[in-house]
Image (cartoon, rainbow, N blue to C red; front, side, top):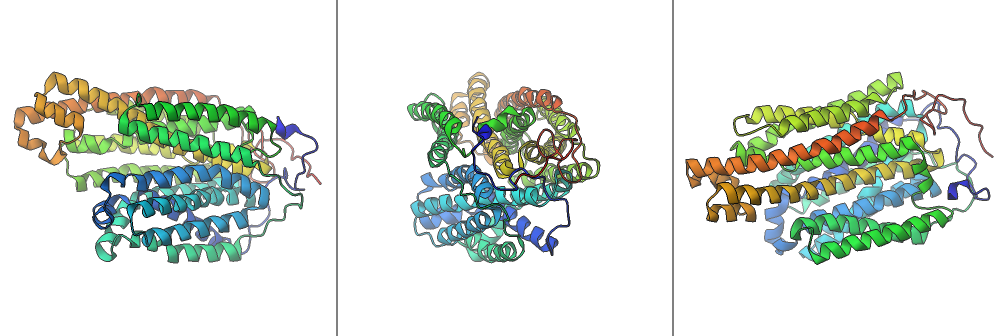
Length: 531
């Protein structure tokens, strides 16, 4: 493997233990700047949702509107491994600042867009910065402190990210109503400039050595193409179905690019994602668990509003309120997990409890019906949120700790990329399953004209009551049966995650110096510093 090459130029501190001395001066201010950048990047994943009617009314091209989400998430995902590696090679500070600048330029351009095509292009530019903000913030923590100390702060970050996701639609609606849709992008400018000033003034400059790093340009291009194909497969399959030629062609392209990228990564001196990391069982488990939890949770969550509104007859406003317990539970569980790991150093049982609770919640949700009640479903969703929160950043922490310190950015971005791809694939796979079950149930229980509207997605939840009591009840049954299948399908995915989590080593993260499961965090004597 490339990592074993003896002639590789390395920085003197490439494999040194993380610092265990005092944090940089005015660390609370630096932490606030890091949290601001993370909040911005997550907020912009969902802030566009409620601005849709105003935005398309101004720019037109409603059929292209979904690409304002897809473009951002596509480049966001592509950027993550690239920023992780560049930060490892060139130092965190210049790469972090570059990401902020790109994000702010993209935000300014989005606000000034004169057509939907321009907006989509500038959202892609904004995503290129957003992915760097997310990775760099977590990697900075890895640079500044050992794993056990880091756990507490990573819990805060995860809590802020959950809150930002929750606040996105509300913030977008308020800004659109009061100032116009363009301000959902312009609002990033003062916040981002404040964060950039904090990073510039407070983040220590890298002291890593002078060896000139060799960037794997070909590997970066191949990985970018692979991620683009994977994200496009999820998007196109949701629009046209898995058997469409565009989906099959894009999938074949992904397979080919994966094979070529793997070969290139084995040959490169500084691969964008060193494949040697996956030789560490702990690292691989963390990546797979992060993917599985995101796949199952967000695959389910995307369709819970449909359950509330079509089966329980709940309004859109009340649907948002019924989601609050899940989001709050997820945020609180994430912070608590970080605090407990910071005090005890033990992490194994958090991913185990996470996957077990989420599987239990998904299984119980598959038993729900119109008679269950919206509040009970909300409680089950909250249980799933708590479960997911228990591992949402533990996997990042443990992956960082299992990797050599010179790869801390790459380890961070790899888990983040797995989580993002899990979200995309979960929504698409479960969406396809839902559509198939709706078609079967509609043909069996509904009149032909109503069945056509259900399968075609043209039956508005608020108008189901106009069909008459018997037909409305049958529609609710069709959706209930289809959604129960979706929720049940999440259970085996989470059980796979549970089995893998049980295979994690039960080691203790050290509070200082070396400390990690096979990398920075194992309970073993500190490795001597190189150079």
